[in-house]
Amino acid sequence: MVKFITDLPLWNPNDTARASLEEDVTTEELASALSEMLTGWAPGPNSLLCEFFKALSTLGEPLPLDWHQVEIVVFVKLGRPSEERTSYCPIYLLNTEVKLLANLLAHRLMKHIQELVHQDQSGFMTHNIQVHNDLAMTDLLERPAALLMVDMDGAFSSVQ
Image 1 (cartoon, rainbow, N blue to C red):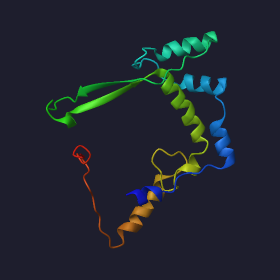
Image 2: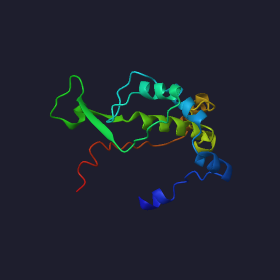
Image 3: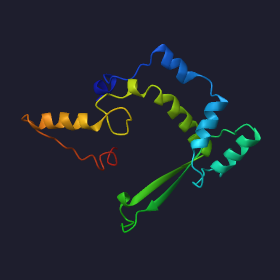
């Protein structure tokens, strides 16, 4: 397993990509990321709503940054027995500034996404077309092959 992980071809950004990802956050980037955030969602442990940050930005005030906390709320899924661990659904309430920073970083990464993601990945990719994968799958179905599926449910709950 260690060999598999160490042999994974990880993205090594070129100097231009690295520089653009490591730039200081600009006011424009922050304003753009903030404008895309939806209002009316649950806040994190500091209880500051997205609406608060949007109001601050119109006043020209600096945004407070506190991303060291998360609140986990656990719900029982409808119609599921509460005695089973698979019946529970955790929801992580992150502080709004964490979501804002994540949005900003996502925008930066999107400029380099074609370098990061293999061309065969078409789901959730704007420029990669699903029909290419469909044709590749059709080609594979013509060949003799075997399929192995492993169910990992509960595999980590038994680790000592």
